[in-house]
Amino acid sequence: MKRFIIVIIEILICFILQTTVFQWFALAHVTPNLLLILTVAVGFMRGRREGLAVGFVCGILIDFCYGNVLGLYALIYMTIGYLNGFSHRIFIKDDLTIPILLVGVSQFVYFFLYYVFNFLLKGKLNILFYFIRIGLPGIVYTVVVSIILYKLLNIVNTWIDRKEEEEV
Image 1 (spheres, rainbow, N blue to C red):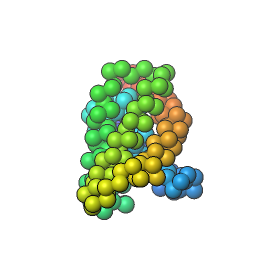
Image 2: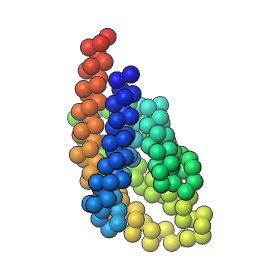
Image 3: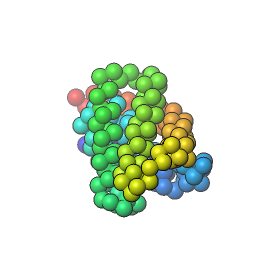
């Protein structure tokens, strides 16, 4: 129950930071995707089911607040959380290489799926233009921010694991 409440608090904090504070730090009109970092981290640290659940909550939150089509972001985030859950078996708490790489790949998958659903289906075919203007800056910015945020999420996850072990 503690983990559930803490994850909900993490989602709300990341959402508020992403939509308010980080808007002030936008580079090339791109902000880091904190909810994606959280989804990747939970999928990587806790597995497919929890990555899927956190991805759904993060996505539906964005859908309700900013989405044009209800469920699009939920689908994208759920896919990313579930796919990152496959790497749960290689989880090493102190290693930053794999999660940072997963964040970069996940941000690319997010960009590609977002492009397909929001641009390609509307007849806008110049993917290279959108990748250079939106995708690449988003990937770089999200990866840089994920170095700090992942470390914080890892500390919180380790603390929760210790508390759960003490209770058993």
